[in-house]
Image (cartoon, rainbow, N blue to C red; front, side, top):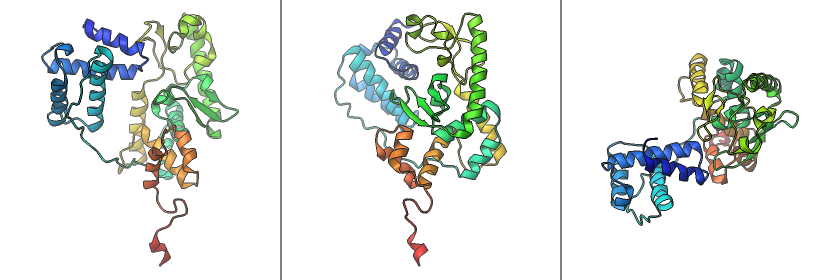
Length: 318
């Protein structure tokens, strides 16, 4: 990054333990804000410029509500935490949006889409649906996170930096074992070249041989090596999300599911909805999904068909 100012913002973000994705998003919007204001230094500006920038995004760039919120969070971090400047009341109200109902597939549609996939991509989608994972959580799975005997998965540093456990379908024991075996073979080849999987935080310095330990191997490793964005060490990261998304897009077309917008996250929605349909209590679903508040989980009660919690339409009683 050429700007010393943005480099110092990045350093502060890492010092505070923000994720790489949050770091990239905040730096993007801070850079956008500075360019929008004619490259004036943020200390020479304040609430009026921030308000004007947010209004510009809403009225001229037509950004989504969530995008507005990310931009606002980035600027709040810049002023309140990094610069130590209070913005006060901006007098700006974010655009509001009613919560939309999630897209949910039928069991037949799930089966048809999964049937249109094969190998690694099929296993990933099966994990999204069978365990309620986000695609990022699935791709970050390491060997130590999988308990094939106890049929459980451990999601580490999920949304909100939370760890949780979720269930693992017995049907996936064999393909997961095979995937782990392939990943370990690749690790052996990498170790012979002096490299290994990307490691969290400063683990590589604390344990110099950690890259040789099987437990740190990604179950779904990338096809190539890369440079770690923080440490600069050459390593093998996990598979990129775009690989899965492209495979899923083709599978949806092959399966003939043309009336719904299907993404990787759709399978997490379907996981929750189908569990509730089958009689699983909502608090259990909340725990499996890792929601802080049961109100977040309750959205799935609105997309259920008949017979949720023993409730049927009054028309059926006529």
